[in-house]
Image (cartoon, rainbow, N blue to C red; front, side, top):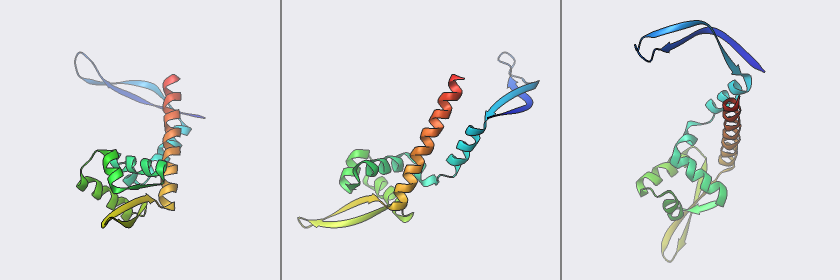
Length: 139
């Protein structure tokens, strides 16, 4: 379904740089697009940070990863990775476990049930949003 919005279409002239309006302009807005925008706004902001998104994607694919594996995969600093992991753990998106091997402590991370649900929703919403963008671009 399409919603029609009548109003002013404000724009700048290329030559003069002055702003003017054309009256009676029509903007077409898809209700699907409005619904998708609301869905995107409802996603926890913590998931949108690029490094965190990559951490979650890696854990989604591999179920579990060590600190060292994540560090190598993300090519970031230890401090930066630790900060992101701590933020995700504090929000109950990921959980960690420690294991001693050759007198060294290894930390492993995985998605919590809440993290799996949130990341799955994020992927579904982004896929729907991409489809809307493609449909709007081809219209």
